[in-house]
Length: 179
Image (tube, rainbow, N blue to C red; front, side):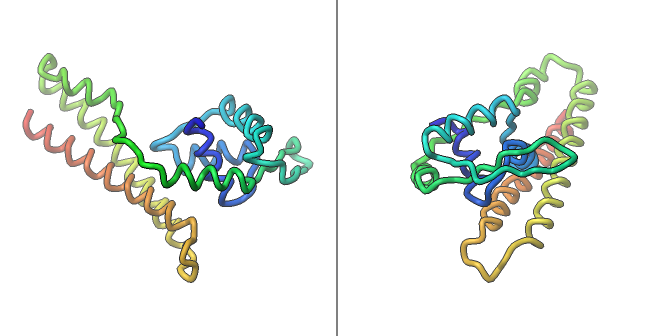
């Protein structure tokens, strides 16, 4: 199964959602490490429904917008997600265009490269602030009385993002000092 399917199942394992809600949550919760478009969500939901991984939970009707189909994960979908979650993973590869640019920084005047590093640092500081806000929001939502609250796993992913952004900012600062 493709990774997008596991991302969809990951959200539906928490609660029934519409395709629109899935796209919004993926681009809100997963956006730093996973982006998705409507052209990916709806076809996958349709295929997954035919395969018995998700099923139609109901239809939301509102006067101010079109009706939306709500999907929920099936037991087969939950089992597939659990199997995938415990499979050994490989080492992820990072594709970062800015790292490639820095690799060629020896060709660029140091002042120009410093400008690029400052801009990159600023963007990562913005992301860090967004992660910190998200972590605080999730911490308020966490039900500490539940041993397996899905919010706890969400917090762990956000904490990874916080550490990553801090590392990237530190790296930019260090490189600026060497230029």
